Length: 259
Image 1 (cartoon, rainbow, N blue to C red):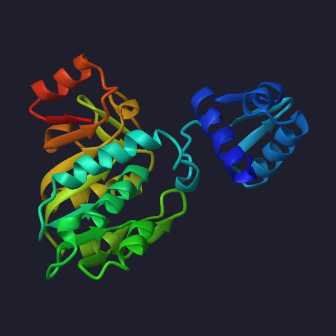
Image 2 (tube, rainbow, N blue to C red):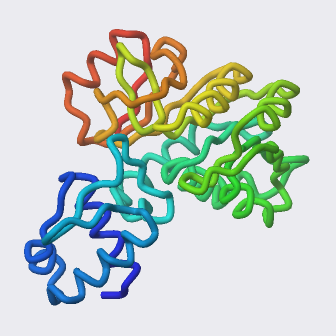
């Protein structure tokens, strides 16, 4: 196992449990305790965690795992969700994409859709995510509009007044939201208030809003609200979403696509 793969697994375990023990982590990852200690020391130097005697704890109360370490989490579900979201977008539409692992997969699913191989443009993509713009910029059939703003290293998203200035000048057919939590009472949410504010404006500038979220995000709340649940037209999630959860969203007037 490579160092990067170990780090991803260690950080995933840490986020899920809040605390890691060196010996237990060594058994789960099938490496030596010395390797785990060295990995935890290096992650602590990057302020990704806090070292303790015999292990590590999460860095802070509200912990946000940087995007580059989240790509392997629920990967299969996210790819299915992304394909379903891409199928809801019509040729020629203007599409807003927030940052995140699921929306990144949506961008990739759009890039390989056969009926979007040509057009003037085939799609207009408005995004505040640097990584999404970078991936799609090589697709000549897509018109890419990247907001300005200050980059958040955790999510590669541009936020702040410069981003808001661009979004205030455009309108979109659909906004696709990546979220860390989606709950009927508390709405769609993110960890960071600046990111939530920019994503909220993107929603306001769109005719319809799609939340793309795996089932682990449903029924949860996070620090900064992006928008109220009633703002959302469609929720695309995976088939692990419980029938009661799906029913509650549908009863609230939200179309649910579970794949």
